[in-house]
View (cartoon, rainbow, N blue to C red):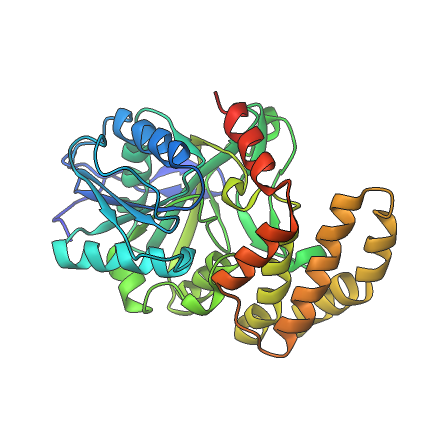
Length: 342
């Protein structure tokens, strides 16, 4: 770690944070798993580069095996596993690179994000201001910054057992103070590399989805804290690589991974929530969407995932291929979201 001192504490709403006095910021390795259209990742990399952070190293893991060989600029590396190893394994490949290079800060970035100038600098300053903090995340927005996607993420008693605070509300409703959170959405989150290495990185058994919740729980068990930072904003496409938030693919993986997550960290309260809202409430949710075939297919996929996950099924790339074949609108949904970002 860099030798840093900190200024006296300054009020910051619910929390006090420290501001580093030394302004030389350490290198950051930004890890971006790629899946889908090459242009999405190319555009996301370009916004990262334009944000102007000195010492930024970008690593893309090509899970679609379709990224071009060149045209990325300096300090961009492509890892080609030759198959879809999943989001979690992709993160761990990048984390290994950070360890090899001795880079102390590790940024998770989805390929459907737009990074604002100075965003990384602001997150670095917030993270390095408190040694008890393992990671920080920004305000995530959608609709070109008009609505909230996440203003802090929490476990809760309710559907899906997790909630992105403020989701769908106007940007004006975003909390203005830093907040301790249960986990940081993997769309854009900055961590200390040492903390991620200390817990063995991302648990690859999740393949994708809910691994960020598991990560937050394991860091908390080590006494480490995670913070939502409201003055940093990143535009997020919203699960674009899986076709969007209500696709059968995403619902299957969430359903499959929820029992695994609850076995790992679930309290009696969270298990009761799962039984009431996701198991008992599953049939009414299917009937509710009977007039909307696409949403009904998504709910059926969620039920299939819950059933398989309850018996320990480990999701894989084969499940991604299965739902892509069965959902002809998958690619169209991705393309619509890509166009909306222009």
